[in-house]
Image 1 (spheres, rainbow, N blue to C red):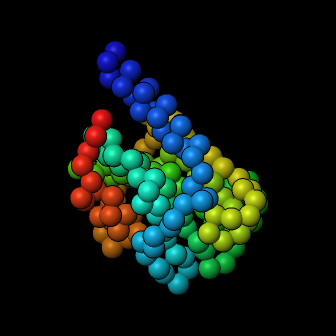
Image 2: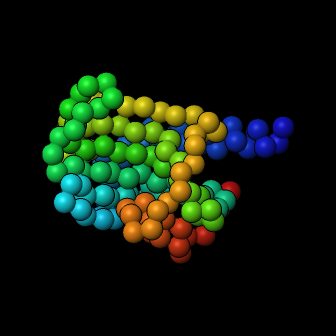
Image 3: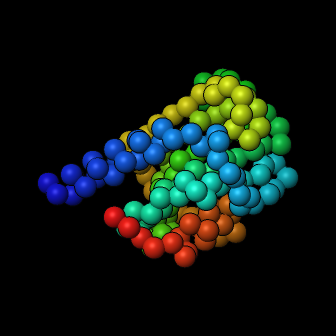
Length: 142
């Protein structure tokens, strides 16, 4: 019962944090590849126990199509990074018709945190760079 209450509190906190506007964020570059640039917002990183919540912005070199058929050139993902396990879970994604998360939000998807699958963080990827940035040097709270 206590675990369920804690999970519900973390979920509600995530919802409130998710409503903050990451489009006005100060984006710091994580990685650059020919097909995409990856950024994260240092100010929006929230430590909770051994996890970190963070927004990642991906700016694409050329437009792609959302699952609903809309073209987009950038997207923002809200992630929970599990610092001790080298795992990550996607919580939310928003697709934008212009670069750097600007323009019209053409599609979005929010996932329930307790139902998400964790995926491994692979070495030498932007996710590994994100983990290094958010999991080192910040004291855990909560």
